[in-house]
Amino acid sequence: MSSTVGGGSRPSKNNCPGCSEGGEPPDSATPSGQGHIEPGQVPGDMGLTAISTEPGRTLREEATHELTSGVQARPMYRVLNAWRDWYGDYLNSHIEYENDDGETVRSQLENSYQPGYGDRYYAKLKGLEREIGRTYEGLTTVMLTDTASHETATGKARPPADHMRDIADGWDVQRKALHRVLDGYRWEYAKVWEPHQDGYGHMHIAVFVEDPADDLAAGEFEPVMRSYYENTDPAGWDAHRPENAVSVSHEVHDLGCYISEYIGSYGEDPLDRSLSVQTFYAVTWATNTRRVEFSNGAQGLMERDRFRRETGLRPEDRGGECVESWSEQEDDSDGVTGWKVDAIVNADQGGPEYHDPTTGGVETEVIEGMANADPPPTL
Image (cartoon, rainbow, N blue to C red):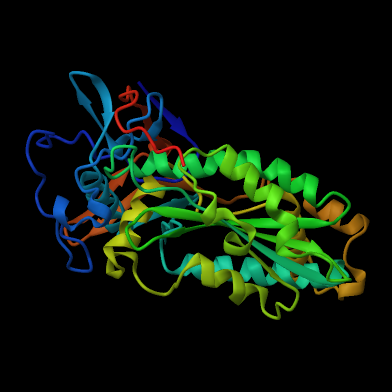
């Protein structure tokens, strides 16, 4: 069974005529000149490892296939190649708009893996930095790092999607402990996924705390890290002791650069980056995982900064009723002649190929999985 979730995506080519699971697909002619990835090229010895074996896991349709045992996850090298093909297609993809007079214009489709998105993340962080500077009396930044073992209980490579979900589930519990430790403080956070050199991911949580007296120290976050460790079987305690997994800084002068170091380098085409980074991207893509995510309060601070910049208001004039009216303003474009989305167009050397824009959602599948096929270690 398949379902559609929100988010822009090219129409799926997973079930195109001529494609079969029994044979290898033809080499991908990617714009950067890189071809098909073989299992042995995938880092972490996980080329032939299924991206997930957890029953009930939801994955992008391109990361699954139909077997006699039902819908199952594809091996990692297949998913990596599917992501590379998907990204290559995006480089020639556009949204076509048409107005009431029949005129059309095109705008290139974007996705979060394109180099330009790095600038957007950095701009958001700089906006957050500015608004925190206006709102907080003294900033302390606490960086927490969550990870987990990359091996199964039998020493094999863990399914990377299940590994990523273990960390994400641990954070869901850990966040409650963070609320208890920071009770009485004003604070927000940014959650950032980063790749290891073997293609698996780990998570950084940057916590921005109003701490004018610089009272906070790494040791105070031991209950936070212990909560993660105790609720994440493949997480070892040594790696999550406060002295190893918590960094506290009272003198961050450039929050954007500080956090961007954890997000990763930008400006480089993803298909030109190392296969470990590409493998990590493929896992986040297949699981619809956001690589950078802000707390609701942090998003509100960034919105306030954007309002100040768009209106030209002085810092002391920000906030108040004008912010509420701006953030809640309704679309007043009814009855005004405008543009509407006419098609999604793939425009390459073979000429434009048109797709119905209403079918552009992300198609997902729920896998049958294999319970206990790759049990994680209990550390």
